[in-house]
Image 1 (cartoon, rainbow, N blue to C red):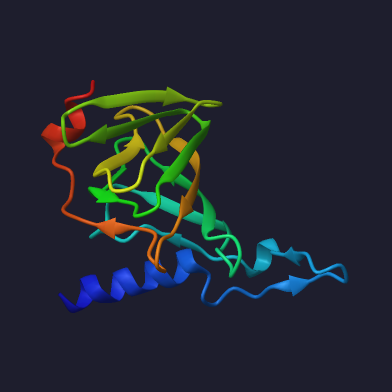
Image 2: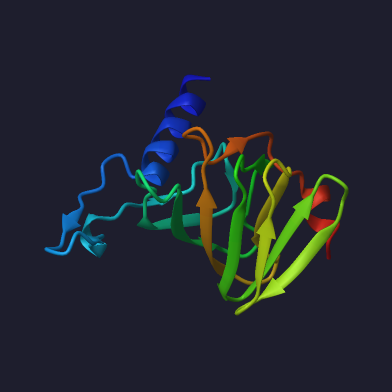
Length: 161
């Protein structure tokens, strides 16, 4: 349980940009430098397979959303989860899968996007045969952007093939 709590806290800190260094331009715009942004490996308790997360920007006091590139190697996927304020997923490379509790699995490709409304339990990841990268833009409500649940079984994942 302690390992799960620690992994969750690290992921929340990274996604919320708690340790992000921000450079402020003269006109008030904020610049997020690549060298200041966090990249990390998706923790085993929240992902199946090899997953890398590269933060692009955190939410701030005005814009309550953050973004990251998430790369899934072949067969990799998230655990079941939901977003209190929804999430946009835009595939930038490869083919993505996303599934919901009703067993529906959507395939979407580079240049296509999926909107996942608030509160919908879902998972997303790569196909069994190829890697995939997507840009996720995740909104937050009351300071929370994700609610993690149990891992997706192989049967649930493969049902969309």
